[in-house]
Length: 291
Image (tube, rainbow, N blue to C red; front, top):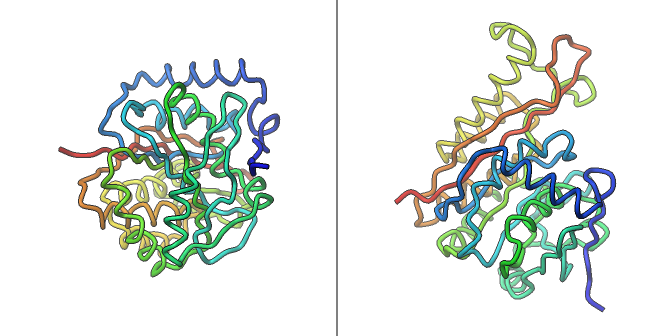
């Protein structure tokens, strides 16, 4: 029997009603007013429940022209399972309420043969939400197109290994049939996240959080993984997808394609005014091939 990764967060993090899910996604994609571009080769998008970050995420996925893409690499952080490596999925199919996405088993084999990647079992895969929250959007955007996914869980990887994984995966960036969906939320602020950086030069707390996130977003836009690492060391901003983003930056740096990341949307789950408040930031970006 085929190993199937169930849509384990459907019915809680987003609706499991296919009609409702489809119409929500359609509405959010349309509301962005963005046009699809064949030059968009990747996105960075949030992974919170859709009531929190669904609208913001649309600003990443609305850019995708599915016409020439046949493979999607998913890069997501690990929230529950500790590994110092990148780990590949053992599933054959990823289910969503609006259509299933087959896993590119041949590509998984090819990457596994590099000898540097671990494997995650189905239990770990289904417990993790970071990649799953991209799947309904991808299933929607790629509806009617023959596309496979390559899910890569990015663990607590050292800066040296981020560079190593980025170099190993860089060649896939140069194939225009490949697309990259990178999963990350931005600042998790408040005592419940053990992070309360506040620079009152920016006025209210939420403006300080925004300024902090924007510094990181600006650095990501430069495409410099070392500068991003320095930023994280300096501010320790709680960007949960820091490792997938870093690996992606190294991939771009070591590829022969000229790809530029641009952030298109920034939101916060709530606007923090006092030290008792908390929020999570969501930022959506498109990675575009420059001619």
